[in-house]
Image (tube, rainbow, N blue to C red; front, side, top):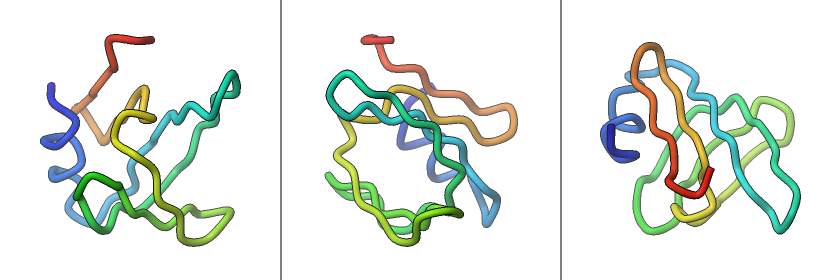
Length: 71
């Protein structure tokens, strides 16, 4: 499934995002906001954040799952 479809299907629910920062990978439970080239979201532990679409390795919301080719 495409990343955009997973992020648009959240309907107020939390989304799990696996994000790569250099060699480090972090899992976030988020509420997604804006869906442009930068994904804006509210992290349950760290407040508001923005990441590039290319940095998202995996996104999951219910049965909808996106997995990047680089995983």
